[in-house]
Length: 353
Image 1: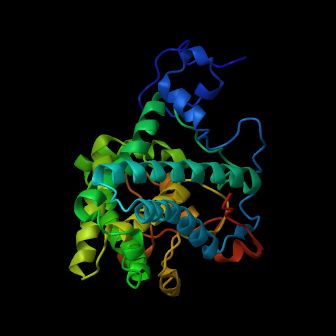
Image 2: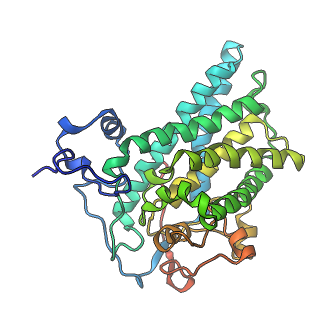
Image 3: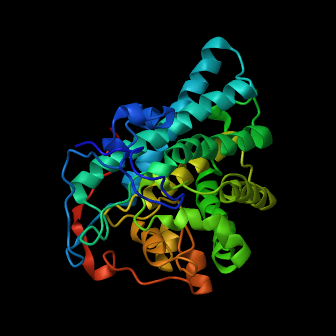
């Protein structure tokens, strides 16, 4: 029997009940149809999800798989842009550039959700022996849809406004600085994010703007930006702007194309970090080797524990690294991804296609 969205009494705005995918389509609205048309679902309802006990070893995913994925999909629009300028002799105006990269950004995020769903059905999810992953809540389908284009759109508006030079080709970006920019961008962004995020938890007045995001204890990739408008503003505008100007202050060029690649790295980490995949995998960074030396790299379980164990007071506030959690004493112990429980021989792969 199909579930009904409308038959029961109205749900609380805090409800995480997710039954809309099995409800009659006559009760759907445009947001339901859009998510379904994009096939942007965290799991397939007709496929099994493997369940593992906490002490079963967790497969390891090397970082180079993640770098390969981000670089490949961030390069596609750059190559198309370069080809357009080379063959037409024309520049791509700022409005056209925004729309072009906006489409590419969203397409990449949605395809990443597809790949992570496939991996979820292969490897299962963290804490899967206790609780399944939360779905997109019945009361929040429209919020999830709008958060997707608001998150990508606002970051690209900033990038175009602050750094886009229509006469410059992608091939003319500052290649020598790019590895340093990618690595520092994640670390510096995480400094600003750490303190904004921690204050959201520690300051009573600010918590009310963050609590919606913490309604999920077992998030999925689509809930990465499930939040109220005030939090979205800081996530989408405040933190990236402060990071951009910080790196400019350091003397880094941070042109549009380099910033585009940095955005792709950050978005990849945000989606992966909310996936809950039962894989030991860190956020890709060109400074990952340095973070590992100080046990400051972040893995999927770290942010998952932030949601699962935290509420008003929490831990693991970073989302790109654990560097600032290490420095300020807010790390918590891993459970399934603790060192003795990682299977380095049974490696997992992030497929390109």
